[in-house]
Image 1 (cartoon, rainbow, N blue to C red):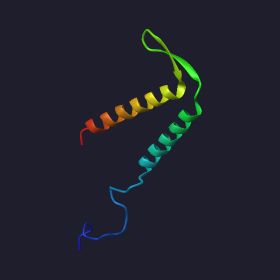
Image 2: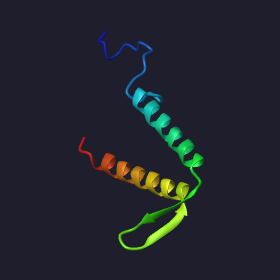
Image 3: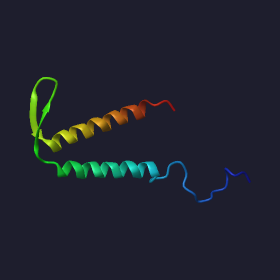
Image 4: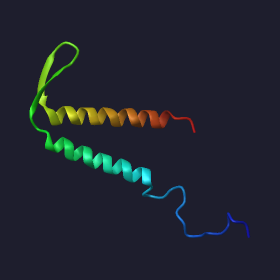
Length: 79
C-alpha cells in the first residue's frame, strides 16, 4: 500500500481553520471592534477639500479598500 492510499485522519490542505485563517479572522474582529469604538467627527483632507465625517466611516472605507487590495493581489498571484 502506498502512503498516498492510506488515510491517517489528519487534516489536509483544505482544513477549515488554518493558523493563517485564524490570524486573519482575529485581525478582522479587532478591526471591527476598533471601528465601532471610534465615533467622533474628524476632518480629513482629500487632496484639496477638507471633509468632516465620523471616524468610523473613514475606518470602514479604509478597511474595505484594504480588503479589496488584498483580494486583488491574492487573486493575481501566480500559482
